[in-house]
Image (tube, rainbow, N blue to C red):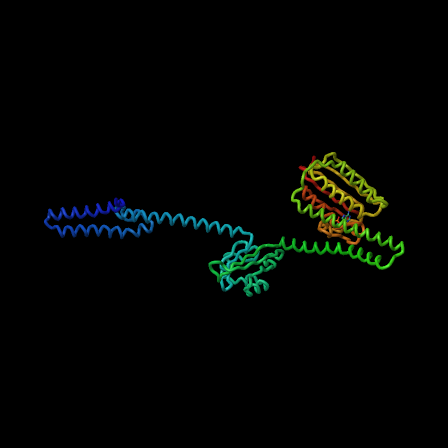
Length: 432
Ligand code: ADP
């Protein structure tokens, strides 16, 4: 069965009511037609009146809107529903906009939107720090005027943005930036410039390149000696004295290569493993006694005078193998960089600031300018002396890594001609 919506029924009643009243009045007055016409006019006038109130409702002024009667009930409800959904959509959009603004404003990378003329349309706060482009002060200004870097200017003019550009930050010369430019998806004539701070990565890459070059050089030297000697031995039968000297040299160079490879492997193992594992009880007195004994053997005929000064009975929590490598590297360095019969003191002491392992020698000492660089891989004060004494230039880099994995720090105090003290400071939490 046909069912009519409520407001249509109400409207029909209203219409019929008007017609009925007008008809009745017309019949009583004997003026049926004019009264019916008047009734219809009243009905029409009512709707016109409601229409004049409609703009109030559209302007969200519900009190002065049309009266909710008949058909108008449906219209009013529809408009109110539309208002409500508009309001929800607007709130969603403005929330999204706020979120986007927050994201771009907290982004560590500089973002600049460029007008086709090269003028700045918009930029985020990081653009101020990295490129010196301040918002809103820079709005409408030419980027090439604000950032007068010829390399960036050429890059922008070229229009070829396939590979990013690497430039020094105009706002901070110590920073290296990688600049990407791409057209906006919905406004292709506008460009978005993104500049990322790649300083750390840039220097890491440079250090890695240098390291590979240095290691290749370190390995090539003994290899050249070994192959040269082998060729000589192959060509003519040498007399026994030369043969003995040559084989001795070959063994020496092969040992040097093997030590270098072994230290490289230790270093890469330490770098690959994120955390020192597992933590164990390391008996310090036992460990240091063993290291000092080995150092005596290493010193051999050089007859260094070694003292072991165990001032505290406490032990350490850590990786015994790694700590042994680090401590013996420091003791062996002291032996290798001090003259024969010089004194070397190995000390272990615990106080309320933590545990301290130190090696003091009375050797050549180190000039202050070298000290901050000693833990760099392959850094040596005197490369030929280091090689002659069997050094690889990786010992202190290994020590630094091991200490980092034990939340410890290396302190180097040295006076040229008087000697050096290398101290490892461990936090109290590592003391047992
Ligand atoms: P190496 O194998 O060359 O000793 P290290 O990384 O252990 O490499 O040390 C780096 C450099 O630090 C050494 O080449 C040396 O110049 C300097 N050095 C290390 N320990 C001492 C020390 N006890 N006395 C003087 N110089 C030292």
